[in-house]
Image (cartoon, rainbow, N blue to C red; front, side, top):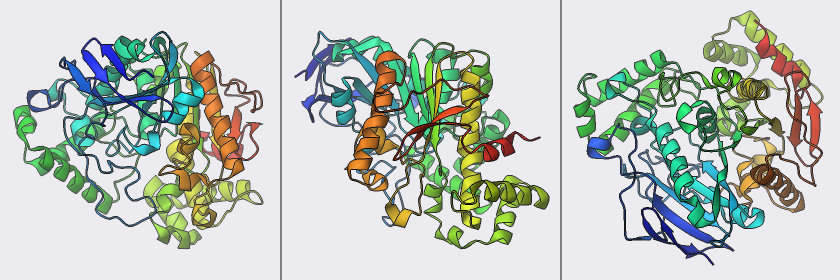
Length: 505
């Protein structure tokens, strides 16, 4: 088995994994510390022999303050050290040196403030061995270290630039691990899906991959003014001056994380928190990201990149599990919440409730909390993904899915929630998110189908799989969508009344 390879930077010694070789903690860029903080990533420093048996540190992030709750510790750094020196990637390969296999590069989620490519959720063993692909996971700078937006810094979107640097490293070095640099699929979920969306629109990423899978991306604000406002608030908490960038580079790493945590708490207290808020996410800076991704894709920025895009049906229910009081709301509270969060007047809020309740009646639960989660899922995730697919499909083969398998956890209260598809994609049904998926023959069969489609795209550029119905290209008229559930099916215009609501002026 291939456990020793020679790269352009030095030799790498991995270990044998579950049916494959694993190479952990490979630096793809120089540590972004000291003078390299808030600068574009630079190439890694050469080494003689690299021990690739252990994962590298996670990016700067806060550790959870509690160990309670269903998902506590699942999405963060786990037991890994947390350091600025975080730009490492990991490789799972079933290959021998004379093989040339498709490469699948995973970008982790976590709202751009938590997470690591080393999470056991993303163990690539099953995907690599079953699919005969090389799997790569990576870290990137998060939160205040990766997405603070200040023009005075001379650059922006440092976390996105880290992802591009990792993809360049893959282009240069993956052949040594048995991978084909001309056959690279980039895929990710949540902030990872948003990252893939951003990479599709980023000029610096062109040519570094030729297929993409966008899982549960969302409508985060990319407006530079909103990001500037957030950055100003963070600078105030750090007691740093905007025109004195050296002060930022001198702040201890722990103080950066503390300021970010205080800023997040302040926003939550004033109702300004949420995935769609501006700040500490990719920003339309004019250089790394010249256009909003929907506009960029519509203009052909990712022409020829075969793309799968989709969401889970009940994205917002994962976040609702952390706020049990939402299950007790009545219609009056629902209208009040919609008015506050969506800035809707009472008539618009009432119309939305009527549209969603009518569409779901006899099909899905339609109590006040159910309508809240449905509206939030569509507003934040599904409608944006549909717009993205419509933009991309005019320039490249594009397929859309809706993941509707319902989690058995909490007596089914989570529905088909955010992150539910991850264990099905990686085949890690016994991993940290396996409890979301459930077990048994039906879950295993669905995992085989989802994995099969993802792997088929990586191998052939189309997600056709023998166990699935024929999956036609998406178009903005028929809106043909693969519904992943106990019975998978192609549905034209799924949940159309709800979708059409968001297109009204």
